[in-house]
Image 1 (cartoon, helix red, strand yellow):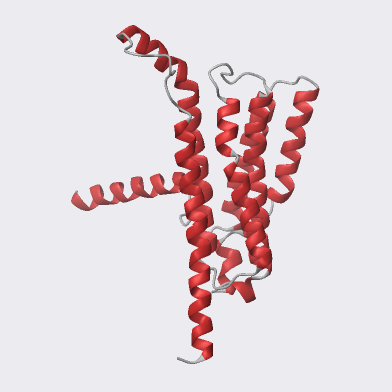
Image 2 (image 1 turned 90 degrees about the vertical axis):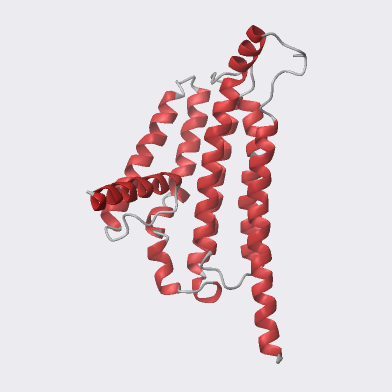
Length: 246
């Protein structure tokens, strides 16, 4: 086996290690989050009424875990799609990927802090921390994707298709929109403005992104790697199967 072939095999192995490590971090984060959703330790041999009250008590944190699970799942699906182009790596890519994984690793802390039994979606620093970490994850993933797009000739396969498939024109909006939304959240806290304005801004940004996707990428309506698109595709396939049977 010549030296060039050995280098290529080694490179492929190292790229696979990078992807496996990232997948492991995602899996560990999701596992750790559910460990914090538990009944009170003082509850020993409870009656049916006590069990009911204890369960109702943890519903906010359980709901927050479900939401966080799907948020992290969406990040993982996007990460999978982006790294499917990867053929090589460098120190800068490793550093940016670690920065993104670091932002995700803060989710268990944010979940515990923001949705403990004493803070049921109240106007607290816990909620700000949770939203801020979500913003950080969006922002760092946007930086990671942007770096790969800019260096796609050296690091990626199918470089000509990459920018269009990843819809980079839409993705890079997060590099500007997320800091603005974060500043809006800080201003809302400082001036004691209702957090519903922050949530409304997030929803408005989501609607804007959806419309821009349809306008800028009309030929890529059904290739998003998201949980919503997955369930939408399942629904479409079931509808097609029913029409065939009829």
